[in-house]
Length: 234
Image (cartoon, rainbow, N blue to C red):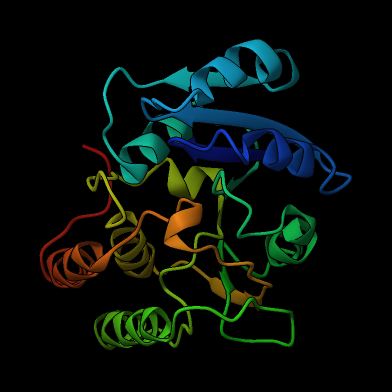
């Protein structure tokens, strides 16, 4: 069993070394680590080239900043593992939880697994109230169209059988990836599981990038990809 870990990265010089170390130490499964730098300008690229390149499988560089969805599209296209995990380059999500994320797929119960910040008894840093309200609202609207009962559609931790995620066209370049991919796996009638995860959220002064405009775009994407979007590559 081989796991491809796709890490989109933009201006994460303060966390990139720690997250790579955490991913490498995360579980006993063979791992392929693919980093996609989305045109970082804060010194992250220098760290990738000088301190990380020899310890991971592949680093890809975008010549201009295109967004998280675009970085994921690039990384997923290069994945060769049996399972693909999305991992943010900050320290909000803990790679030590990979085993609980991949078990439903390994046991052939699921094709896709969402790691939910809103279920289970794992620890969560207490932060922005309105962010949690917004996340739950977007999940609720998404569920209305997909007929799923997810608790956290916007989670970073999404895990896929490789053949599933590589069969899907990813159109969104920014955080619209989350509602887009949710709509598309629902349309494919994938077996979707959800497991509770911990969450160590960060503040905007620590580098958090998502904002209210991304929430508006997510709402638009829920409507677009559930009502009109196709799933498969041409």
